[in-house]
Structures are given as C-alpha cells and as structure tokens.
Image 1 (cartoon, rainbow, N blue to C red):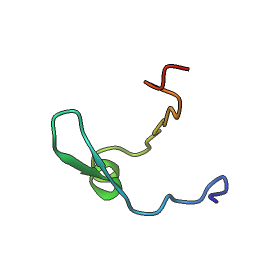
Image 2: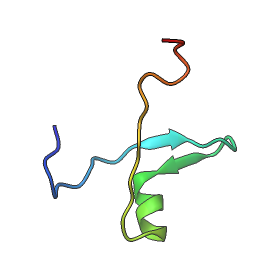
Image 3: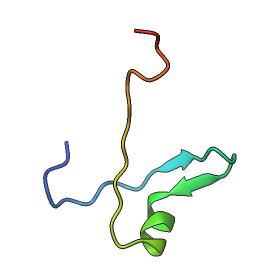
Image 4: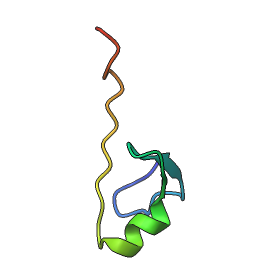
Length: 45
C-alpha cells in the first residue's frame, strides 16, 4: 500500500493507441501525474 508522498512502483499500461506507457516515461514528460482506475467501468452494474 502506498502512503501520501510515496512514489508509485514502476509499471506499464497499454494506451488507447496500442502503445505502452511506463511511469518513468510519463514522469519524464510531466512533473506530476494522476492516474485514475475505474473498477466498475464497463461492468454493467
């Protein structure tokens, strides 16, 4: 579990264009990031 102020572990995510985005690549382009994960999206309930 992460705590406030801790850096997230490195990870890779697929983009909508079929490429791969890593945390390191995103942080190289932007000073701060917010990733949102919607667990119930597209589940129908």
